[in-house]
Image (cartoon, rainbow, N blue to C red):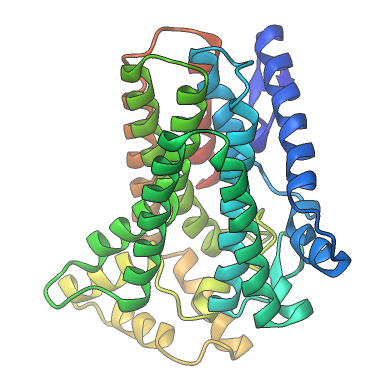
Length: 336
């Protein structure tokens, strides 16, 4: 049994292990090649997050989904590179919007080079992803374009906030479906599609990816509160400090509005205060870690992970399916 990919995913089948390892190595090489420029400064900025590492969660899903067709088909690795480049580009843009200082344990691009360079580097990565995508055919371009539209829509909805009368939790889950679920779904879709898997299999894996992507982000929400050392390289409580209302905070506000308990209301008021103050920030983290809202967010994470697992039911039993199921377990484990 060998550990492959993020979360310590263990693969028991030697043939599957070899395929996944070879694919991930080829993706890494493809990322380095795709981020080269004739201008050394652009190369350095574009490779900044590539070389910082990361879980490569989406390329791993491409490789596993490709097992339901021909995993050696020529479009599999390039499609994985496209998905990861797109993801990396969004990180450059997210860090500018969030004014983040650290990403994957290193200075964010906006901290090192400023917002303009960070935004333009993200655009450069989108351009390189599009260049690779053009060789994969019009259907691949359409799938990517639709996912990118959903991703941007999710970001806009997050910025705009819920409309009057809309449940904030429902709104937030819709945001995550666009911002995170859409691209994880594309990773699974590309892997199956490029391998020539049957259309029914492509659809099943796309549905799985959508749900797994939301569960993955919800686990990050929980970790941002609960973990002392955030595995993404971000400082714990980053979202709190920046005033971003993730699911644990939304569940707290929902409970405060429903029950009106004094402690809940007081914690909401603390969260609405200036949490750039280290003392208030530490107190908010301490109280949220002990609050039932965090446990509710964990249950929400488990629910989406279980929906992802259930979506796999129509697929034939094989080591690749077992690995996809294990990823559902791993996401739940991350959330505690």
